[in-house]
Image 1 (cartoon, rainbow, N blue to C red):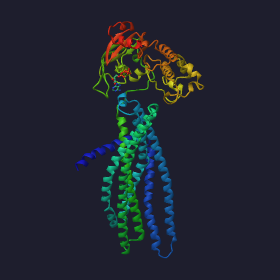
Image 2: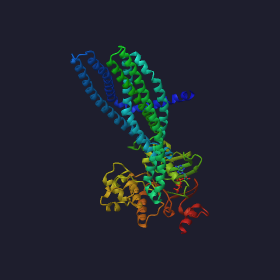
Image 3: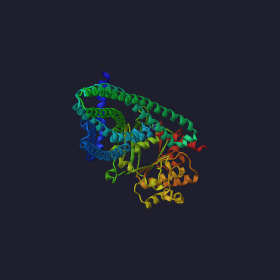
Image 4: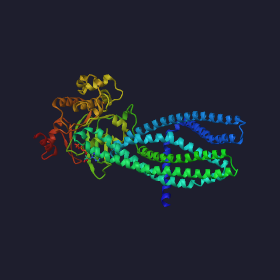
Length: 594
Ligand SMILES: Nc1ncnc2c1ncn2[C@@H]1O[C@H](COP(=O)(O)OP(=O)(O)OP(=O)(O)O)[C@@H](O)[C@H]1O
């Protein structure tokens, strides 16, 4: 008892949350309403059948000698008319519902994606990409089924059950009561099995998502899978998950089967009892055979609807699960990102940056202080190098600059003003990053370069490619700028990918440039081309280089040396190389000693 009391408000709350999604249907109310009307009319027409069929039989029966075929023909024609009307209404209803569903789902999909892409990095740190992707596709497909079929079925069945019951009572109160006596049994069965079906369906959804994650992750990292000869390892991993999915599915099947079978047993049991009683009434002259026929047909309609209602119930349970997943995403607070058209004069970056006593912990690992009390100043157009052993916190500094995260303590300033006071999009649109492992989209070279400035024309893209020393290899491809780079750019070499990323940054023309130097050495020719392009790119803007090879930082205006999250040294190459026992000096000696 206590258990149900605790559960009830939760269920109602879940249902209420599901109804929040109905706002996506709202704009299409007229079509939806018309669909409901057709549904209503065709369900009512459905209810006329048993009555008319009963009358048809009685028309034949009461006029024992064939004297008046007229009445029989009239009823027959009426039945045919209703049948045709029902077909037309059914067609219109389905068409309207599908239209409404498709449009509202498109808007829901768009809405969820728009929201997802604006979520802060913190959200993505604790989720797996494959799982999110599968949620968007499978949960929405589930809702699609609910919107198109389930809702309509639910309404149709309710009309048939209520209308049917009224007509049953009208035909024979005694038989109706007999029929209704079976209802409590059916309801108990529905409640009991429905709970299990819901529990296992949710589990199954989660397991399918996990299995999909394996597929997506291994396909994305196919190179690693092959290089490590881990195909069989992955097959086993997948097999384990798939078996779990199958076994959960089969468990659900058992309950669903038992559920449906007991429903059918209950319904047909009641039916037999009714026919038996009806036959006795006919024998006693208290009922016409046509009436019994109507009664049985109504009862079977109602029985069918009650059984169908169970399916609908299970399906609604499933879509509540799906809705909860989707709402979880929608309820995450997004970053305040807006489309930047023009940047306000006050938000224009001069290139001056300072870190004032910044400390930072990643939200997913609160106990580890990754940056400790970091302070430094960068003047406009300076070249800064961030140096330090692996894990020192160099990339974290860059993430904070991009405001992917906010400092736990202290403040970052641009133009002397708190970074948090700038609109996020204005800030990010004035920075560009050339990352260590360049990410290219699967389209053409042109699309990948133009990513730095969506809508850029061919001339602009070409100029950027030339500046980035990328034009010489693009030109050699038969398709030029329209060469497809392959999934994630695998059809290009490392040096070529980097130059495309540089061209992208050239096109963006940022005030602040961030370079994460590649650790993997390129051949000397590519290296020279990349280095030359970078130097051109750094001119006339503030640039921050995460340097892995110290040979490239000698020209820097300032080198910031980090170690285990602390700023340990700061100065030019000339200054730092003289610090006895200094980290920079040690690192350089190590690099140049072999
Ligand atoms: N998303 C994250 N969540 C939790 N901890 C992180 C995250 N990213 C990095 N760290 C931790 O923060 C510390 C600093 O990492 P960071 O990537 O800034 O170092 P780095 O100096 O750039 O190293 P490398 O030269 O190897 O790229 C490391 O101890 C790392 O484990």
